[in-house]
Length: 234
Image (cartoon, rainbow, N blue to C red; front, side):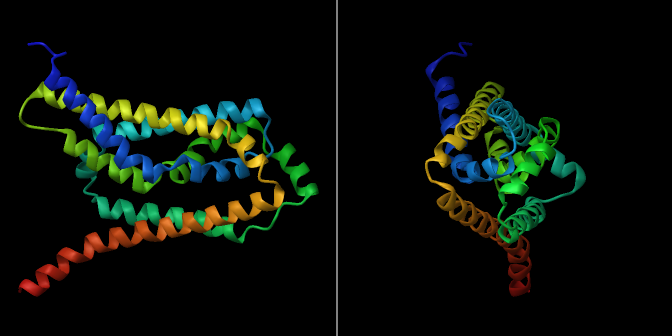
């Protein structure tokens, strides 16, 4: 059997585009970049670059695991996707609310932050909250789990393998995109100026709050709709 034949390459290409189109609008690294800059303002450019690489790698691993094992893990623990959306949406909304209520950092506070936020402490925050839930949140994970489940097919094992290969390639590309966006985010925001950057950060925090509320609402709808349908049928 020729695994490099056109049908199998088509499975790979379709799965790659399917995963990219489904996850990229939700991850949206351009929207998370200002939050990354705000969290890492006390770090050097070299430390910020290493942190961006670590976050990109974590995003890639998180999405890959969600695609391959997400549905099995949820089934094992008896957790539904709507429950994941609700819990994750609450975390996202809580972080966004704290960011909206945070006071503006003065020059003295910024000096203290430079000494307090060491590279080791920043690395600890690389996964939480910088990777999850600010960059790759519950919405992205839920979509990745759904995509991974749809890529499995009972028609043939090779088709499933090529489908999963396409999805995993998309996860690698998304992690690389996140890493590059965060790496050069400070240069992009520097051109905005301090006042515009503050406004932009507040706006992104508000949008993040809206995303968290939307994720919670979608989870509630998915849980309540079957109950209402069953009540109406009876």
